[in-house]
Amino acid sequence: MITRLKSGDTLVLATHNPGKVWEFQALFDPFGVKLVAAGDLGVPEPEETGTTFEENAQLKAAVSGFATGLPALADDSGIEVEDLGGDPGIYAARWAGPTRDFAIAMQRVQNELEAKSKADGLRRATFVCVLALMMPGENPVVFEGRVAGRVIWPPRGNNGFGYDPMFIPDGYDLTWGEMDPAKKYAMSHRAVAFAKFKAAILIHDG
Image (cartoon, helix red, strand yellow):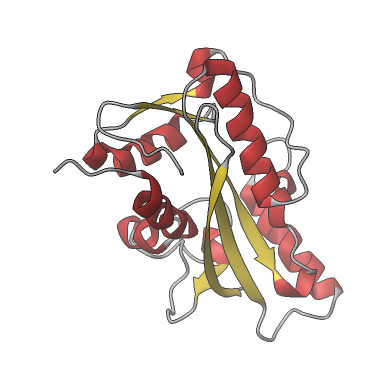
């Protein structure tokens, strides 16, 4: 049986990114759960040695959970391009280089597709997010969100981040970089994963 989170609980978010804390806090506010960043508690960022989104998310949640003794949540996400054998996948951020320049990452996707003679065609891709929750004394549980679509070239739009300007979700004509951010967030791979997490873990007192 999974212990559920209720209003007044504190949850450690396994990140050193203030923007990610802000984004997740907005999701947790209706449930009265307070988030604190692992970085603010002095928890170091672990090396992501996993070979899947699930392994990396569980690793990060476990490190924060064991270090603090509090419930800990981690996410790992990326984009899988079918014609690249699922790359960049878990290495999506690393393709952006040490400066995290996703213009470089998107250009690399295009270059590798062209090298495989896949400059045109369906160019299928899927955004993936895995949330891992580590409750004290319990095994981690994971929740996965996926959004299928295709990648295009050149990128379009200045909204979002990462690979958003080159990704068009199925059923739409706009890239995530062109969409209104609120619309994109509501349908994102993270939103899909969080909906599953919410149903299983969160208690709404309202």
